[in-house]
Length: 293
Image (cartoon, rainbow, N blue to C red; front, side, top):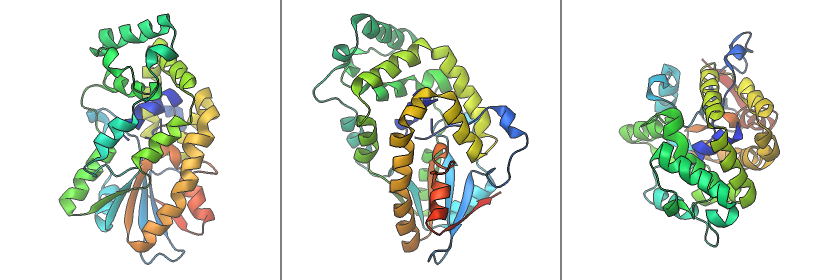
């Protein structure tokens, strides 16, 4: 990802995600201490690659190892969580963001609505009224500049640029409708509660993001996953829906695409670790998945 509240931030720059405190940098297991993985075997003519991203970070802390650039250049296609190169993607996303038969002031109490409205205008310079029909969980994305700074770096954005420069096709593992559909399964009152909490605990959320970013730099996917489990009750509650279900849906699609052509897959790093992470599920499906340093 993305504690879970922070993982929702990345959804709007399309997901994922999350990391662990810097103490995990000591004594890492080399088997899991990589964000880049080579996928081969099980009928693949040539290897494809899998990379774990964090979906937004300050420009000053963006890093892209040479091994990642070489892996992308060696593949025929670039595959992200969704196809960010699709011309109609943004308009479709904007449509899917909206509640068609509800509004924020109907879901929240008067005091909660006023709390959010004051935060948006005072801290973000954005009036809340025009956004009253945006799904509460997705409203969290508007807090990104306040947490990360203006003009954050995006791995997905860079990969789209690299693909364009190299003449490579960009694809998605899921559609915008599918991705937002997972969020739609979270009840609106739960989404609204998370939004209120993220504003009340804003300073804590910012500090947690800084810790997560430091941990992402350790590049250990198992520590990333453990951190998500250990620091967020919200994540524990919704892990099945927003992480595991998507991982299980992605793995057959990864296999199909990799059999058709060599692919560079990039998804939120929170999806890679764990017994039902993408790395483990690919291995269970018969693929060789080894770290690339």
